[in-house]
Image (cartoon, rainbow, N blue to C red; front, side):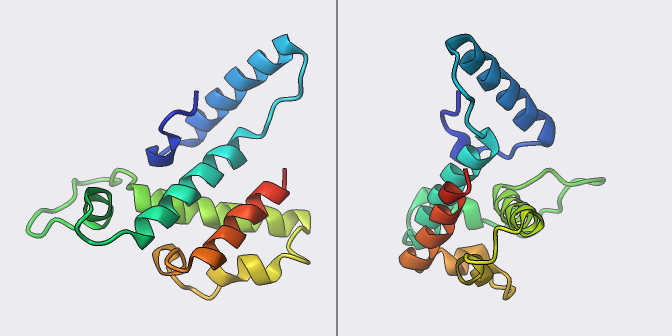
Length: 140
């Protein structure tokens, strides 16, 4: 059900619908359902790390950083871009973990993004990026 979720720009309604479907399947099997928000975020961040470390001649890198010149975005609320979705997801995760009090021991790992550095810059350092992704895994 999460095939290709690395490239989704998901809305809250999409995430709730996915969680509901997975919960129903796991309920039938008699198991506890996983937190789909964290699974999707973890996969998005893994892919974002790969994209940030790619060379500039790769299509995924070109498309993710492409800024069309001479072309204005449509009026009204602009459509959500993939890079914006990654930034928003990281901010929401850090906020939720801070509210739960889970940042006490992991402040050093998660603090890498609080210094107003872009995720694409942090993602170039594989060790630091992996520690961020693992902090999401630890919080199941």
